[in-house]
Image (cartoon, rainbow, N blue to C red; front, side, top):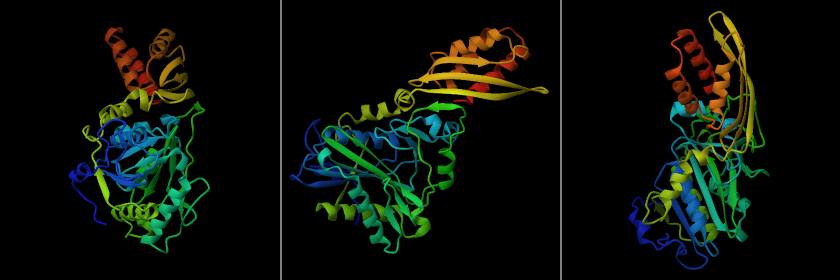
Length: 373
């Protein structure tokens, strides 16, 4: 199946909403296959939200195909500090996003395919969608040993996870989305989905680690392009719809009114971090200063991503107790974020005594507190 590469095809077809509550167009019972022109995780998640909220899905089904540049996506009820290495994400310039659906944390790059199946709430059935994906894989590679588990994962060879799944069920509409590992960077996937943070206590949904494998490792012919085509063809055959794939530009307000607002909201600190369920941190770290190793104890309670309670205990002979209390007091009410510590540390340095040793100790303490975030 040749995929169209001009957005004009999307605009010419009566398939995309041009008014806020208009139906998707076409005959009742028809389906639609969309593919994103963007590799931006926030834009693509915004399209999911838009279709779920704006499209009339009572008599129509939609398949949305999309891929992202490197990103980590956590579930709606997860704790990013518990799920990934935020310092490594910042170092590598990898985006962090929070989706509207539940489930665990996933790593995306252009070697990973995302599939979103939209239906009415009454017609929602994730197992049917996953079996459809399995049929598409077997159509490309008949000897491929793939199956759906009772956790709604797709596994290869009875062991390796190649697809994870999550869903959002609204009052009248629903969607189920899943990943498909084709040629993702597994070393980076493993590194970024490994939290280095110690002493976190949280009731947030925790991811279940799994051994993973790329489909390209099993069969070099299973490229992302071929997989996208195969899933689209199988979807069209299963639902008796036009196999044409319509490209959609997630940045086009004329096609998706209000999409910029949705995209912007998904990028905000308040959504990505502030929606984290309440958690606490109780940990120790060692400070090496000259020939001494000192132990520092930190206890914090964090709600909506902001520090509600903060206690920092440092040996009195090393740093005046008043300074630790000042740091703890300044952190209380601030975001649980390394940039906040940097700002507070710099503000104190502008007013503190010209004592080089004291300044050095202060910077050392603040840097280690930063590393907890």
